[in-house]
Length: 367
Image 1 (cartoon, helix red, strand yellow):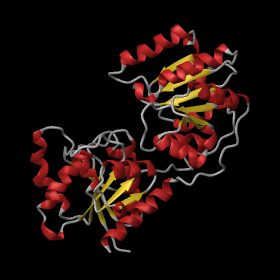
Image 2 (tube, one colour):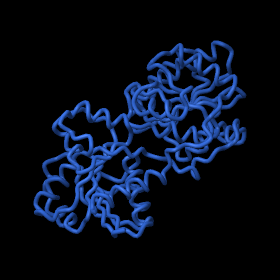
Image 3 (spheres, helix red, strand yellow):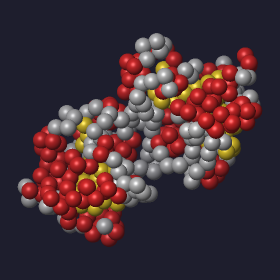
Image 4 (cartoon, helix red, strand yellow):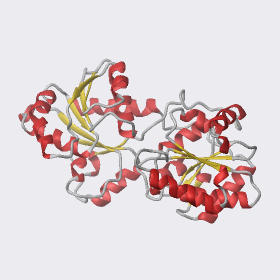
């Protein structure tokens, strides 16, 4: 096995799926004896990256300004020492592409990962220019082939994201101790009825209104259901947060709803819950929430579209519903609250599988 130097490019090291995947691959590279470097503007995950043993080069290659071009000489000097340049976002990918063009014929191999279903455009097309284009789901692969007709299918490699089963370990259901801890922080989530959890940032695209409608319908039937919208309380989202509380007030369920900031301890959040919702109004590229909840041992209900539908069909078909069918959502939620469905004993989408497949791909392009 050849020892490699892999440089990953992304805008910053703040919270998000792209950043998490970057750290996970950097960790796998270091553990396998390779050299891992990340080029970004830095961020709150920088200490975690450095603790792994990876290197960081601070360059604002994701800055949406003409001044970003001033970073090209420094970026080119960094990339000259790499075997592989792996771009994970559009502007950093363009920067990497331009920097590599000045290195002649012995330049590093250029790979990309498509983490999202970006609007098709010449700007987004840079993510299809890698020698290999990693797709985080079959949904992403089909999306690229549909919107970029000239793209050679053989350059697309599907490597699904994965979760660490040791972190998201199966817990008893129900878990009254976890529920009590959560209710201690958010009293609206107490009671003896089912706790519904919808994790997601404060945007209408996450389907919070659908979840509140479901809550109202269940409570109208006499079910003491509670709803936790974890992630809606964010800076710059106060108006949206207030609109959700107003909707809950009008539906008569404000006392059974908790809107909170993002949760650091997601395994405990899943353990405290009885049913997890994934109701995104727009198809998503993957849907890690589905895997995390199922791994902990909690059923998931979600719309059958995009990466969420793909994962539910593969792992838990009973949780996949026709998109935006509120009646189907109510009927299935009612059934799951009465009796917990049979859940998969194991999941194939593991962090270790994702790391191994990515490192194997790196080796394949340099040999």
